[in-house]
Length: 162
Image (cartoon, rainbow, N blue to C red; front, side, top):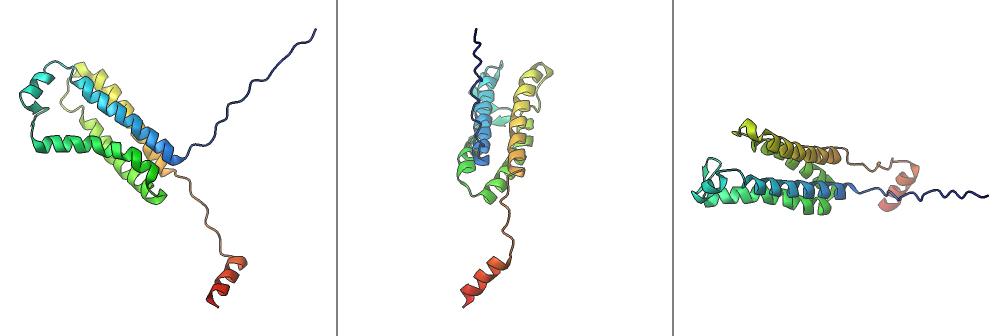
């Protein structure tokens, strides 16, 4: 009697470029960001406030809507910018924007009651985790080692001068 044992094929796990990781994190952040705002509309009294022209404690105005649009547009642009900016600018941009959005995300819980702690705790917690992933990925961006100046490069420089 023969027993056949077949080893399972290992899945290929190619390295993912930092730019793709950053874009994916920003896309995930955007989905969560938009859905949290959407689900917020289900809170009792929120729609009545919007109908009355008030969001949070602010009167609805062109300025308020522009600020709200910008707060959504910046992370949305980060999806595209993370894939297209040159590495040095990309790294710096991701570090700055993610650092600014962490306190901005936490601000969403200001003034809320403990009844809503699970909703805001989970949503803000995941947003902060995604932003921390962006910060870590950008901070640890792999570097290409510099080519040391040796006899070969020195000879090339001298040839160019002549």
